Length: 341
Image (cartoon, rainbow, N blue to C red):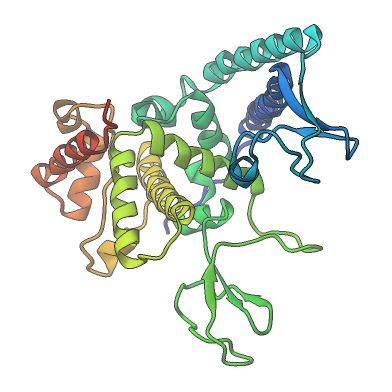
């Protein structure tokens, strides 16, 4: 009988807890550093003599559009003064110290993961995955922890839930589309991303969900293959939902790209660790939408000699020539999506 989930040893658990503490401290420092950075810059305020109130000068949004630069946004009188407030010099020193501390943690994380097989065999060859994101993937989303990729998706809050707008109740049937209407009132269910509910414990990890959002942002900005896939998903979603807002379009495309990447990470990672893998859902169902893992920092000649990749493609009945067409595709997409100068 094949074992799809491997329990961690005591030493592995201790090491994981140590590096996890460094990772969380890194983001705590980053959050504090950004807050201090916002206070370091010179800030402009509007003081109204009529109202006796001082408020920030609008820089963007509706307030800036409706402000004429002469009158108070509250009372409309022309009794305003623009005030500039210089920050305390200690804030500049605090900001530099926090930035230095934040950067000092990156080499610490690298020392912990540089010899890990998941890093030097896979994650180091993915454009957009650096030391920090690699540390998160190895510690929180180790492929040996999850029996299936769908369980990894659920742990990250990337699954869906079925919401009844009439009963205000959330159903989690496990299989998308198994129920179209509410079993109680018959109302058409809304398929949505999982949300927090006051007084209830969530079944997914909020930190992992936030980190997956960061992975999606990285791919959308600096990725190669996954950036091309991101733009491809945007086109498909826009064609299917013409009325979708730009923000929803962007977030939906990022979510899909991250799910594809995690599927690749789970499948290829288990090959690296010598663990059994299940056949991908599109192949089981005979669909033509299966996308094999891509090491987009490698060139095609290096991929041809990758024994794990050749074994994985052979298992799914995919020829190397067909697989290498992905390189031509994302390179063409990379040229198309490159911003004009």
